[in-house]
Image (cartoon, rainbow, N blue to C red; front, side, top):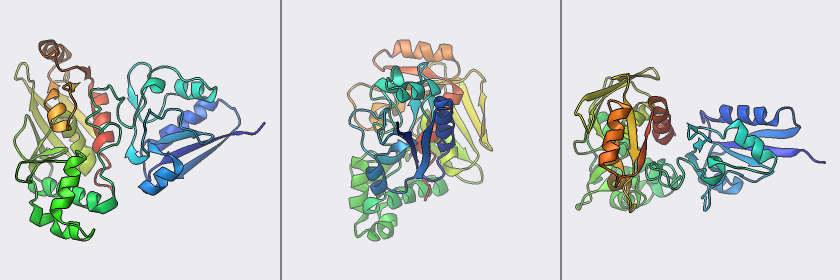
Length: 329
């Protein structure tokens, strides 16, 4: 009987690749298998290998956790265990079930790159496709230029400031911005000016982020604000307010650690029914609350916005997974 071949597909320096290999090894529990780690560097390779986000685990060439209609991508990928917790790799229990041919629970029913299809964070993660723009047609270069401009100046760049970047791909800035907006990497106003480029907002919001040694910026939502330190590799101070009580909520991120004030603070993640871009579907429904009690009370008053309360660690992990790779080469 031939050995099972297990392939862990990952983008270079994916922080969850070691976790995926560790859990595969634990799930094997001494069983013989060929385990290999393969780095996928672009969209073409992702399509060739069948990588549905990083990391993807293939059992004899098949992704047992692939969501229905999955599209190969080099975006980051999250998995949810039976208890609802989010992690960067399938749980050992889920992997064991997959190895024996039977997957059950949330990881089987609704796996995805960032969130299950019915999850409140689905729009944030672009239905599992991630928020890292593709390299083709100058999209990633322009998107990263927009994000860097926000980080340095606190404002959105104009089309003229992006013409040189777009020209390298043989396009105009207007063409590139329109495509980025159509794919919900950013939003434009009626005159084609950048109104938001997740995680940044060009107009004031509830969430203010002070970047160490740099500018103060607005973020689109709580998850976006928490993603800025991971994206920039910088220390930040996030200032927000509980939408129900008005109490100040502050998150100080330094050296990869975060201090929340008050200590009881949580995040509510919700999504308005009807779909649409994240800016209108969920950004005003992802907020910092001073306590779980306050978040639940707000949710009770807004029953038309389905969602859930997540703790500090989980909120930080989701934010880092969503925005951490946006400025990577």
